[in-house]
Length: 251
Ligand code: MF3
Ligand code: CO
Ligand code: CO
Image (cartoon, rainbow, N blue to C red; front, side, top):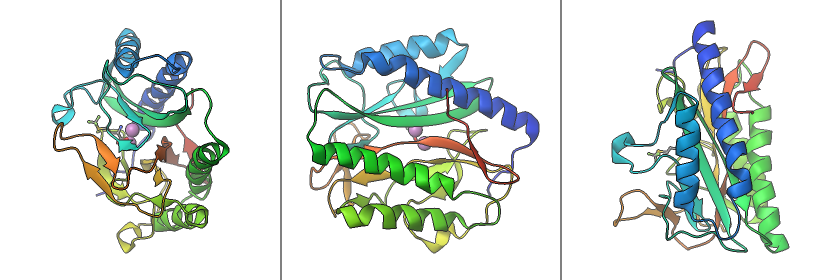
C-alpha cells in the first residue's frame, strides 16, 4: 500500500530531506583526491548526530556504516572504508539517508574526482539529466510507470542501461516503503500518482548496454556492474503536490 502523507507528516519529511541534502553539501569539499571514504563516513556521521538526527543506514539490516559510497563500477551500497581512497579520474556516488524526529529523507549524487575524459563527463551528466527530467514529469494523475519508461528511453540512445534489480522507494515514515520505483517500464508501476505520495527517484545507470549487476558474496552489500562498466546515480526524495511535485532533498 502506498501511504498518502498528511500535512504534519510532510512537514517532518521535508525537514529530514532538507537535512540529508545539507549533509551532501557539507561533504562536498571533502570529496576529493586522497580522501578515504571512511573519513567521509565519519564526517557525515558527526554532522548528522550534531543535528539531532540519526544516520538511517547504520545497522539497517546489519549495514555497518552511516552512508554509502559507491565508486566507479560499484552500482550502490558501497561500504565506506579506509582502504577506499578517492583518486584522480574516479566517479563516486555518496548516498545519505537521515532520520529526523522519526521521519526519513534520502538523496545521493555522483561526484567526479579531479579530471575524467569527455565520455565519462557526458555519462555522469546524462545520468543526472535522466533523473531530473524524469522527476519533471511527476504530477497527480499520471502513472508512475510513465517516468520509468521515460528514463529508460532517455539513456538507451547513449548506449547506457538502467539497472533493473534495484530502484527507488516510498520514503518518509520508514526508510523503504511501497511503492518499489522502477526506472524502466513495468506494468507493476502502473500506479496512479496522488497528492501526498512521497518516494525517491534514483536511477542507477550503467555505462554499457548491460544492466546486470552482482552483489558481493564477501560483504553481502556491495553491488557492482556485471561487466565492470562504470555506474552513476543521482537520487532525490520527491513529494507529489496538488499541481505537480516538490523535490524535498534540496539544501
Ligand atoms: N540510501 C539507499 C537508498 O537509496 C539505501 C541504502 S541501504 C543501506 O535506498 F543499508 F545500504 F544503507
Ligand atoms: Co539513498
Ligand atoms: Co533511496
